[in-house]
Image: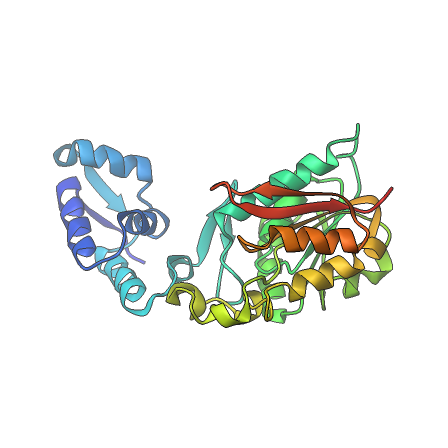
Length: 296
């Protein structure tokens, strides 16, 4: 893409014109940053003194306008249009092969690391797994945070595994990780009883409501990663059912779930014999995560 140079005044006029067509300012600013190379802080300085600055963008305004119109007219996710998504302290490659990583899921990583740092030296070595790895977001984060651990990412979608491999090779290439095709715990059977930390962000949206989602999600993200069955708990129940055998003694399981599933997910964990079951809230205060462990 060809770069372009223009005055701050002209850029802000272009921005106002695009927003007059619809959409949100924060989304357009995100596009200017990721596709145009204009950092948010620099844009804020332009608002204060537009006439005193010349802006250099990494692509032409016409190209940015085309992407913005595709987002408005066809509801294409901006992340798909630019092919990347900032997440935690790195930038993931994204595509329609897997869910776009959400900001609230970042907290699942912090909760997981808190679990394994309870014991002295417990961060030194171990084995983690990411069930339903998708883009590999959680796997990348764990591989980077636990460099002396061995890790496994599992997904039933070959396209998602290819995307996860791209991200892991680029962002966590020196870590010890493997990817496996299959259904939840099944490909990890050789390591059953030795998994100290397992995370999962499985499909949890009730099937009847998937078609009611915003078009930007419903039409561009894989239904396989959204549809959690009639009650939204089908995949979660499958994961919990085998956790007592697959986890190491004292091993942790952390799952993300729908905003109204905290109590039934906790009940599933207790019924499966898991201990220390508790709920954790997301950035908006909603009970979004379940944490449990196998008896030691």
